[in-house]
Length: 86
Image (tube, rainbow, N blue to C red; front, side, top):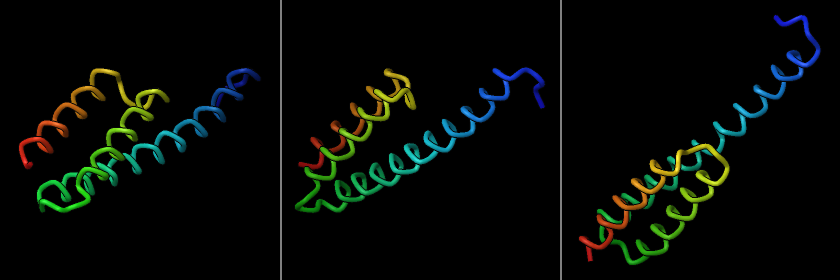
C-alpha cells in the first residue's frame, strides 16, 4: 500500500479505470459474438449486427481499451466474413 498521497489517488483511479475497461471489453465481446452468429446463420439483420459491432470496436479503440491495429484487424476480419456470407 502506498504512503504518498498522489500514489494513493492513483490506486483508486486505477480501480475505477479497470472496472470501466472491463465493462467495455465485456460489451465488446457480446456484440462481436452476436454479429458473428448472425453472419454465420445468414440472418436478415446481420448487416445491422455487423455495423453495431464495428461501431463498438471503434468506440473501444477511441477510449484506449483496444490498440488501433487490433481494432482495425477485428473490423477487417468481420467485414471480410460478412461480405463472404453475402
